[in-house]
Length: 441
Image (cartoon, one colour):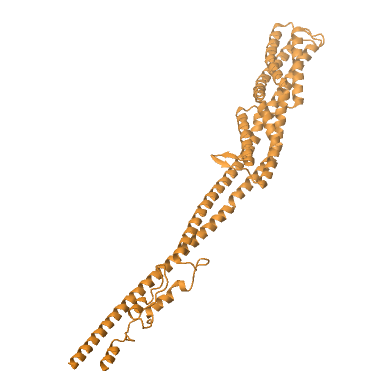
């Protein structure tokens, strides 16, 4: 009985072996290994207490004190997948918003440029119109070009179109109302510019005619003055002297009328009427002195020198009268062109004011931020938040991996110590058994 008692005592498991096993926390790699190996080797023993290092690692693990909202209860691999999908979506939305914001900014910049272009052309029209009425050839090209460009600019702003290779959408409702006011004001100036352009041939001819009159008038004045001087020196009846004096007066008045046209560029109906009346009177007086005229009480001059001088005056006046007749024939068109120029002059200032306000409003829209900008900002912040969350999850996963490795290392050490202790117990038991056998022998 003593032998059996000793065997039972020696083979019983030891309670204090000096080993310890740390229970491993959950991780994505599997459920806790705990002390399964220890229990398999020593089923009747309690799990040993955790080491101080393992306790500190569990305390430092961020997952025990903080988790992600909404998805913090999910396993780490699933959290990571959700965050990656969300980050990818945030990147896509950010790129889309960035592209749309850049496109919107480019359109706003183009609209501002179009409004500025329209303002410039309105100013150009205001300068080109009076020069066109005076027969300036370059001014007609400027007027026609600016009229077409301004029409095109307003059409693009209101209806949309292409500008500098970029598609411009139609304006918003608020800008459309402002554009409608500008287009209404522009219609008057646009029709006036069209009237001036339609009379381009007449206005160019008018400029040449006025300059021709300006050259002929001094020559006529000199010839008429010479005729009066010679006639007065040679003597003559009072009617002839009065007729030649009237020629001198008419020549001076014709010269003043031509100068008025040339300097002012204006086409006054009163001046045109007086010019036509004076040319008719001048022609009748010259013919009366050459051929006689009973109504004027004139007889033909007999003096050969005076007749030669009078014929020179008549030849000069033929050209003069032809020029006067040409633009008197187109007087209605010339008058309409002058009225159109005056209309542009009075309307242009208000048109420039409206276009300046339109330009300022488009520039204000360009400087402001739209919904795409704020969506880009929100998507960028969301993406950064997802990146930070991914970093947090990966850090938590790394800590779990490190803690699992520490746990497995401690379990291996515990198993080694346990195995060593069992080996020593087995050796001691074997020694006791051998000693008992020797005593029995």
